[in-house]
Image (cartoon, rainbow, N blue to C red; front, top):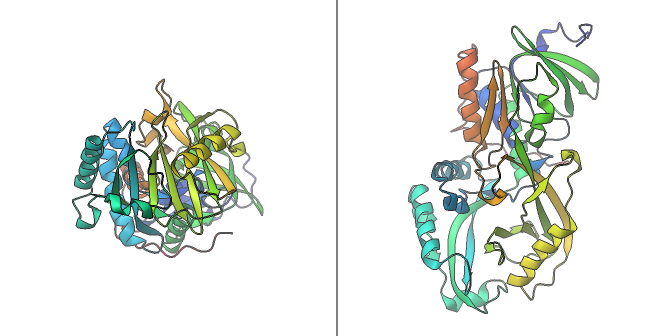
Length: 401
């Protein structure tokens, strides 16, 4: 890496922490580290939350289905974070009712669902407003045209929704208000280890810039391993599978409530959700091995999702008006995607950490874990704590461009 960049000697090019990636994980880390008193810079090659963080199911939830794979600690943590975000960002995170219909032939039995919802409520802290109930048959005709043939029972429970892109933007704004420097668009071209940490070369709209940091965080999501290969010496990486999740937007809102549905043939969970004045339908789990910058919905995914919609809402006549596809990062394994752990994983070296996976709901808790590792290597920040993300309200997000 050349030493002749005129911007390099400037004191404004020296940071305690540089975070690569402006999705929700990178946003959470820069907010937490800046609040702890470190001098931070976050870099995003496109716009904030433009990758997977704006292409999710937009749910702030514990993950009811993760109870089936015994991920109790993940669900408990996520439910705790759901409660916290409902308080810290009421303009961005709001509760809603979720309906789960059970039919003759459903893979999930009523007793299993009741047990799962009871455990979900217990893990949430037994809040009164989080209790579930059974919808009486007299109310079934009010469920937005849901198929009633063969319907045996309908459960209703509380979870929450958000605008994922706006939430990411709000966390970035919070970090910036605490004094962090934010760079977007700013693409990291290369980085190299130094005795003091890392030296990072980036490309911005105004040209190339070199910065120094004491700790480097790779929060590039599906691009994390690509980014690791730009670092000298390469810090190592995690073997992962990239899993494409597609959502369809339908031009007519089915309901103001949410539906948690079971795909008849494989038992996968699919959501039908209100999204502004439209309906959000998703998601899929399709293996992906291409360029993460080129991820697009497939015809098979469209057919899969529209087949579910027709199965459960046979009289709905809305049309697809938009679609999106994002990539989840899952540890490589032989078992199917549906049963893999959603726990976040880290790859760590001296003055370096990469984040793999994680859930939108748990971004703040993940950032807290990263901060613990930063503090272990760098020691307490000299500037002193500026805030605590457990209590720091999020600002209303600026309008997305």
